[in-house]
Image (cartoon, rainbow, N blue to C red; front, side, top):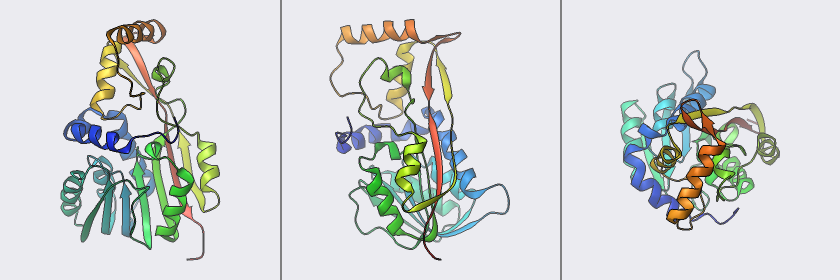
Length: 261
């Protein structure tokens, strides 16, 4: 339910999966590349003097962004402290002049850098409890005309799972995201899409979700009976030519902070 996310549990689960995350999180990896492309375009490399990344994790977005643009100062944030070492290595490889890391929940972090040119986040916003406050916080950190760019997931994300089991995440649709951002930001580009992965079995779906760190499913312990019923219902409801399928619902937003330059 909304507001009930256990951020410490999220941190622990992502920490356990951090080393193998990019291998298994194929959707999030592709989203990182797509978001970086939306920010940087396909022409001459743009320059951003001051950048904040929220939810840097395994560094997929850091790598995608820094390979497409020039950055002077890069500040990364994540619940998992070990993410800082990964991002620092990526940033130094791409010639970033200053690199720093802020460990912790972005919704509670104080002393964020200001006058940012870009605040960006890949596949993290869905874990935030109070999005309107997040938009206000990012507006305060950005310079007028600065960019807030993020990818997240919409209401039909993992619809196969949510139809069978309760989940802890509160997904928003694109219209709702635009509405929350509107008082402070002007949309530059936004879009949503659906991507489907095929698996041999429901058990393989569960392994895929587990390997990507956190699944958003309710935390109650699964009994053998509950697991068996889930597998049977999943197979009967969501079969595909190769076994079963799982749907992702990525949303991409690039907003510009309102105000005079």
